[in-house]
Image (cartoon, rainbow, N blue to C red):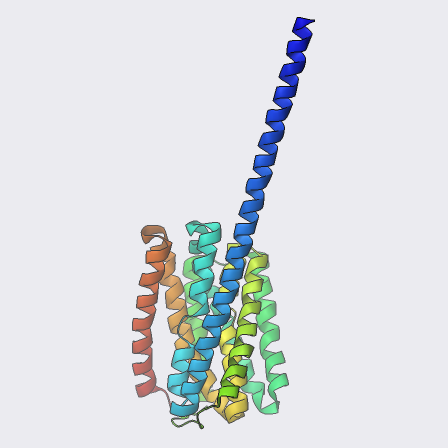
Length: 300
């Protein structure tokens, strides 16, 4: 009887300990889930704010000072910084490195996007957006399904796409730059631009939540800033003005955003996420200065 009582007591104790461990594990999982959700909401909010500020700034500069300077600002890395940073914070530095390595190939898809927008914009905004976004979605889906090419292959694709896109816009489409833009937008117009851009950028961030680091790299290259800037410039200056901005963004975005991704691919594993992001940002702003000098001397 005493032996049976001891066994019953041990059973109850083991059951209580097991239940306590399960409860603690469930609580920790719940806390981690809540932490991840809060982190994603922070990322969503930051992306909304950064994207909105960036596009309002770039389109206002384009309106006042012309498409070259406006396109330069629009093509500097903005949402890609937040996307890669949060990929690293949530999934680790290795995942951020993988995502950064996909940026050259993924950003190359923006070449056909800009070409088709410029080709169809004189038929109307709806035509241009449909013609530009359809191949972007199709090519991005293929990239996610099949996986990105090797890093060096992605760089080669990026160099070819950038050169071909810019050459076509400059020499075949013969798109002029506008050195003097329109009047300064009103406060209402700026608020509309901010709301539009924030919404578009947030959609891109939501896409990055669906998949892993590869999809995160593709989402980091989603032309949210390009798309918002082109829509806004169309309404503020017309089809030809938006074409001029698209040509400037082709050079600036292809050089500066992709340089950020390339530098991040090499610096994230060595310097860590935060230091690697800082170095990548510094390098991209240096290339931004060189890009503007190139625009001033070579771009019509």
